[in-house]
Image (cartoon, rainbow, N blue to C red; front, side, top):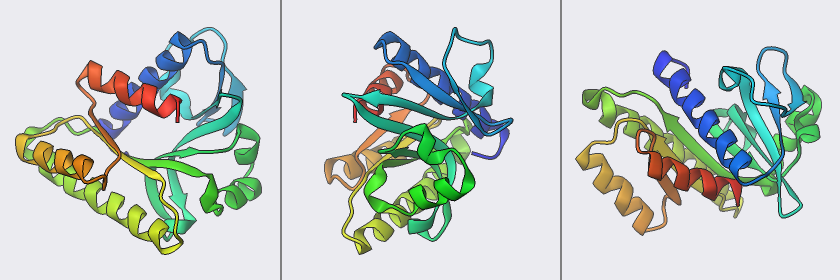
Length: 196
């Protein structure tokens, strides 16, 4: 998620996630990308989604934190767009603690790829990149007998790749997927993430 399309996708993802938590009445903290500090959510701040690099909340009294653009040690320090962890924000409060947390395979609930490019001509390339990253995740965790959920969210999903995504969902190679431009699909995957 390093280009303009990726930044817009991350902002839309964040807006949807925060809205889902607010509608469900779930309090959350958010990680400010400008100073790497966790803050309690207050009234919605205009353009907050631009500053957010992570969100932490409780699901049935269990801590959950989703963090963006993380180098995951288990996956050979490859950058993963979205990681949902079984931890609270204090376990990611500084680099030393964060490093220890990210090395614990048991804390990973779900890992996903977010692709924001909207050009239909490039959609297949975005999916190939995401598919490779998701396969890398699956391979790395399988080696240590762990099986976190995997998901894909893309802004441009063409017919051919939609079939492949559906097939991966059917065979459980992929746990969930959504089109970033389809509000119903986006709400569905946000509810799923918030309640894992």
